[in-house]
Image 1: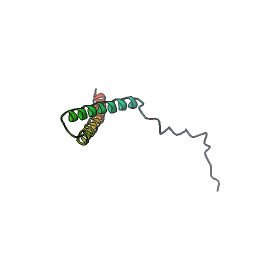
Image 2 (image 1 turned 180 degrees about the vertical axis):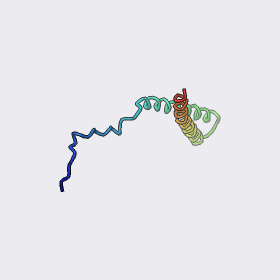
Image 3 (image 1 turned 45 degrees about the vertical axis):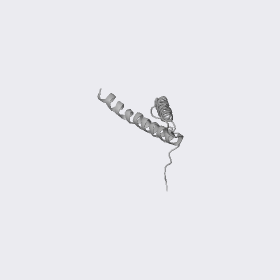
Image 4 (image 1 turned 120 degrees about the vertical axis):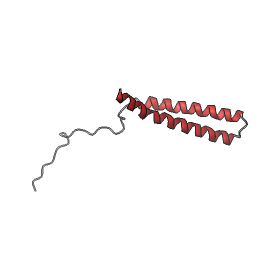
Length: 86
């Protein structure tokens, strides 16, 4: 029963899971959210001016926010692929 134990000093410390691989994601994510919010506010405002009830304007604004956010998030992998090919 002679087993060897490695000391914790010999092993490398694990990398922090909270640290993102690319820290430039945070500002870009903020820009995406703000752009999506701007589109949603504009759509909601235009729907209210058109005479749509508040509930309908809110639903349209939410759909506009979601669509814009998905479009912004879909562009990121495309841009990364284009940069790798260049």
